[in-house]
Length: 115
Image (cartoon, rainbow, N blue to C red; front, side, top):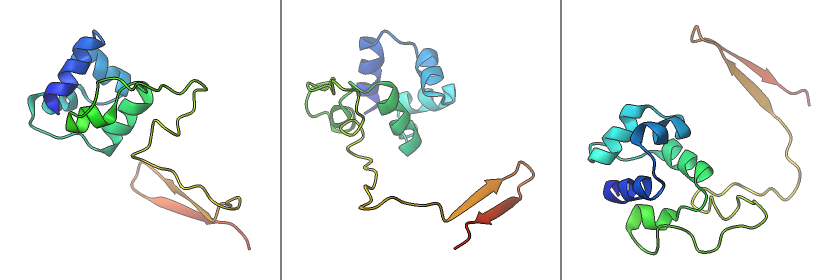
């Protein structure tokens, strides 16, 4: 996969630094993925798909198909772009049950809705 990611950067004419900054990931993370030291995690792949929706994730992960998707969504919908990360589609509207707030002093506070 690291070779294919490098091919993608070359096709997009991006440096590793530009790519890392676009995805808001550490530059070292990109370097480690490209060198084969680490494998990309969920957050990396999700950001990659959001920033480069024309990239064919099947090609990136397995080498099957072409680098770019043939059928780009015309309406800007992301439903097809995130096929590997499907979002639930509830039958009825959801409501908030609780909210967790995490503070920088490693404490948190939980707020629950009233029934």
